[in-house]
Image (cartoon, rainbow, N blue to C red; front, top):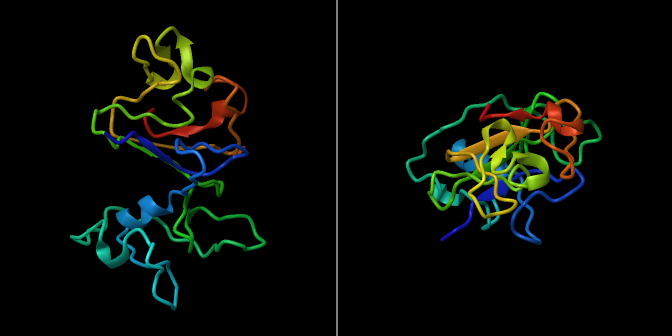
Length: 177
């Protein structure tokens, strides 16, 4: 059975669940927007492009139509909100959205950051922001649903050693609120 998976940025630490693997939210966005290539790319996509030949979205349905941005990786300017030419979806402050998916279809979504006891534990197995943890587990706070999307908020920072309602974590924007 596949575990849940978190796509996102680094924010000074890697908030993914597979060691050594870093994926931005661009793979999910490419599928949701039915992109088979990076916007403006004049050459065919690499054979590793996630939605090459509509393989992950065979009906070619556009599930998401966000504002597009002209920001490109390597630009000397700060990232802009919206979806850039790198297909990373960014919040109003230019920070990438973090997207966690329930890939084992158990209707419980574990986010790599918000599953942590230090971040989400309020009392026992009751967590901040409506998250809960199955009894007898640790670092396993969950949202009862299929997708979690969040942003590091205006300060663009997160701290895995602070509760969700304190310090730099308190301004995070959460889809499940």
